[in-house]
Image (cartoon, rainbow, N blue to C red; front, side, top):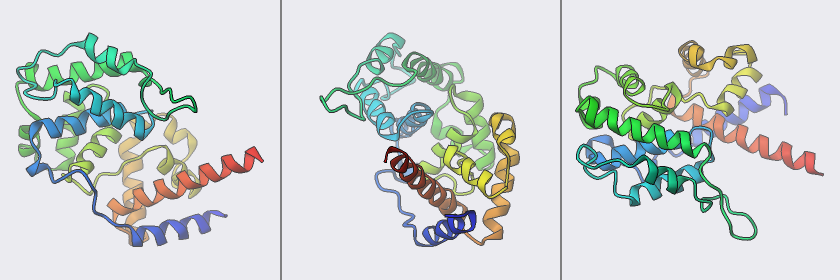
Length: 238
């Protein structure tokens, strides 16, 4: 399939996507524990399988540290111990699982993030969202307050809690698509942390050009590119 064919599939899928996200409500109706859970899921989700990140997030939630985080003592050792256990998906044929990727670093990110928000800055995620001027201001606040959170993960968090539909989630699949469509180069994405806003503007212009809603487009691209990657792997195996 050539680049034009890939784009046609993306646009077709984009037009037919069901926008309703199951399991997560609007941020105004989520309590602080639920908001913090979503944030931690995004911290864990960086460079890790989605299924693994969710399983790890659920385990941390069971530890009880997400309830009353401003009062609860956060144990780095306990979080690290849980994330290091080989019991998370994807599971091997013998039933054994995997530990959280970079569990030591992720445990530190989670601990420092909770301390930064609730102890050091004496605020909450809800207050931060309510006092933000707009989604860009909120994203910048998240990046400043949290550890292990950049533009992509902060945008994902705000998307997941229905705070914004106008922030682009530039993950590896979306970036590869943009390279295929000559919207950016490999050199541009080598330093994505510094080029994120520039590439985001390019993506926004592309969404406008093909007349597709932003909050559908990156999901459609992610889906198509993920399927293509799996198919290419299967072809290499035969």
